[in-house]
Length: 280
Image (cartoon, rainbow, N blue to C red; front, top):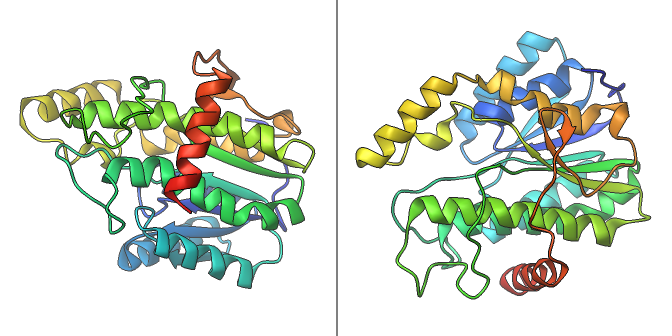
């Protein structure tokens, strides 16, 4: 990977206590960046921070608590970042969940949608100003090729029977569509927004599904055998590569742009309006 100089640049990575997020944070720290780990568990965050500092020799790694399913927590995280840093240069929205049964967030929102979609949307909105101040800056949304089935009339499965796989798939479709909406709104600001697929990675997101479907899923993941470090390659490239300077609104897989069918402008705008309403 041809990666650019990251010294003096401040990078925020959510879901950074383990898996892909932790390895992306490690890679950015190794490039000399100042890295902020956004993590729900303070204990695991401190373990990740210490590990990254030890392995990279970069002391400029900080952990801040955030629950990406709770809007009050996201707002507090945004305030803490703006108080500490006048400028931000990279936001990697990576935190995500895959839930076998319906759960609700502290705000009364279906938990997969609250975390995987509204968490991305609200944090990016809160940090727009700091990213623009640090331009050129980048937003990287970790999405997936395993995406589809978004129902904009029932994003929380209140009318449909809840299905954890379907809830995850639609959230990953929404993550791509949010990226296109962000890219359009940020045009001319010096802030780009791209979506990436990290690959089928054996990360913690697959631990919770239970029963035959969960066992089958984990067996499939084991066969794929992508490590979190391998999965971190494309998100890190999207955050740091000189090849992507000024490029926005792309769907990136294995460090290449891939076509995406989720680009209907009317649906994208409906999704944006829904996220605005649900985070207002």
